[in-house]
Length: 240
Image (cartoon, rainbow, N blue to C red):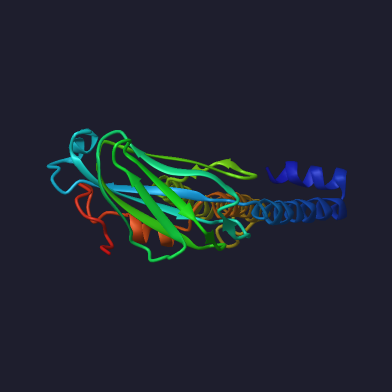
């Protein structure tokens, strides 16, 4: 790989390579700033079953569940009722109760028990602000909503994303140690090839974190309110 990179540098020129790298960095920054200017509202969910005996019971629809739905404004603009075209929760079973566990007077909820629908009205929600609804229900909960400019709300899955980051970090450090152990010159293992591989992996990791910052809810928020205390999911980690 080292020989290939050196060959490309010789053909293109060191100054041109530097210009390309700076252009790509600027492109990422510009895309980030542009993407954040849209009205954006994303959500994530967590569910527990206090009476379930094992994990398989979580798939039984006639049981009583408690679901938390976290809505997060990850754009750079304040969202008002003018931008939200539709926002509701719909259950396949019965909705027993619903409450806003993150105090916010700008969020109003109205339950239609006959249709098992919860309508959500947002007066405004500033950038990086969020609110959480806790619903006691039977069956599953579906979020239906559309917002101007970006359309349908994005459903994020923080646990999957955290697992993906952990796997890649393990792979990253594994490749670093592998390169150090198998370096041809033990006295000077930090060869140009090793340094190149390091920056390639670090660049991929940075891209993953960049995508996360655009699309998802910060892990610190989602894990605080949506994670459960154990694998049987009988109790949320943070009771409110």
